[in-house]
Image (tube, rainbow, N blue to C red; front, side, top):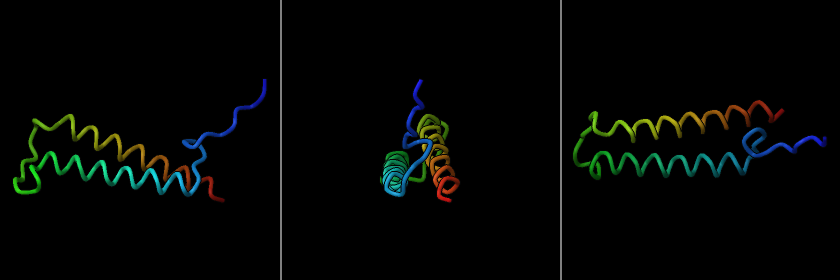
Length: 74
């Protein structure tokens, strides 16, 4: 069997990291915009638990990709 080439999740390049962080910032910002009703109402409540979990998952994934980038940068 031939070895599989490394994909962008296991060995991300600089462009992948920048793109993923930009997407993460935009998506997290838009989710906060939806949750807080355009930042006029501070309504962090239990009814938005699913959105909080989505933001936590996106943050976890982004941090994992950043950690792998800095580990493989050497």
